[in-house]
Length: 100
View 1 (tube, rainbow, N blue to C red):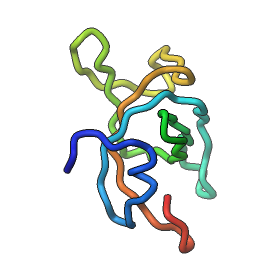
View 2 (cartoon, one colour):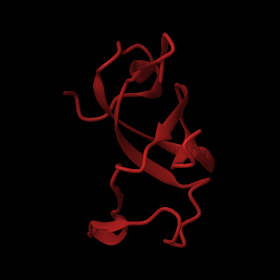
View 3 (tube, one colour):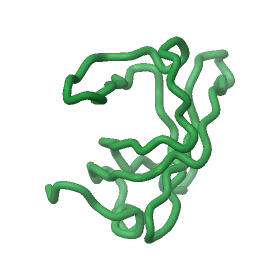
């Protein structure tokens, strides 16, 4: 897998493709699914476009500021995600015949 893909390249991937991308968070919101389980919606952007995504509870969140890597809880870490640069490792999924 190429190191980091642009948002445009990620959008061209087929279902079940893994990817790594970097961008600026332009939207970040905690939600609950129909079973009352939490998940997070986010949008990241780079110079090629915007990518909307969902982060499910089993995902691991890492803070790598200062050269160290440690796990964080996105609800209780004190980080303001909107406006922050992030790296994401994701999987293109399919739900109701739509890629996500």
